[in-house]
Image (cartoon, rainbow, N blue to C red; front, side, top):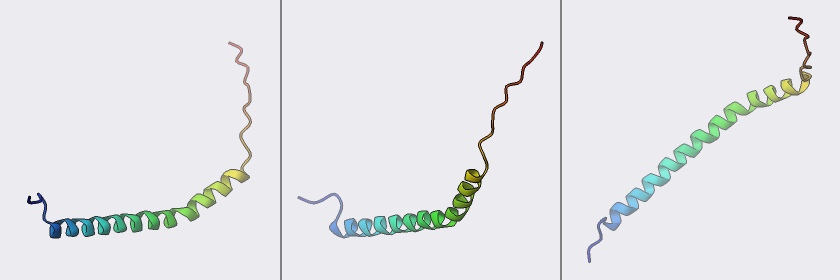
Length: 61
């Protein structure tokens, strides 16, 4: 019985899938490295600023 997809084609598809996944992982990893310093700085700034105190304003209308 013949297979719908020849085995040579299946190996090429698997190779292409691995290449696409590798490129996607490289892009994701590089974006994470690019963003980490800014995220860390933002976190430090947020920690240093005290939480705003909510003041209740009496409205005399």
